[in-house]
Length: 147
Image (cartoon, rainbow, N blue to C red; front, side):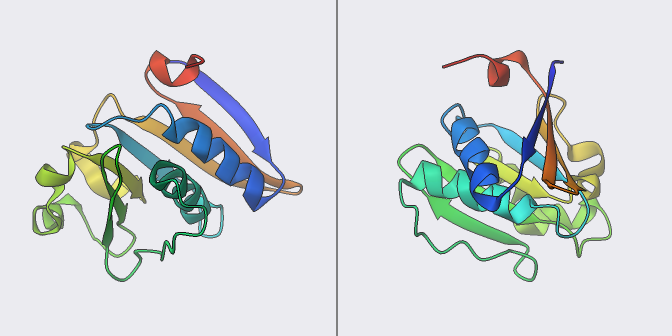
């Protein structure tokens, strides 16, 4: 699977990268967002969801306590998961993981998915850097071609 590495000095740059990837997203896609606290996972998810919703002011709360937020867009239903509080993948059935897979899934803290993490997911790793954040993409080749 190909990899690409980006730098984002600001939240706006992170959101712009997310918007460019949102343009390639389709139902059935899973985007895994990994990285430490404060690295920009939710910033990325907000940019992605706002782009697909066509609303740059859409309120996108972190699903840290609700565990999942669902957004209806013309492109697809988007399921934004934050699995930080889950011990393992067994609780995902209660969060409608199987149903979510028919839409577009954004998953923060994807290590909690365990064996449920799809092989063909787009994996995004965000890291804190002195001048902003580093963003590494890894996944199927279609994410890396101009559309």
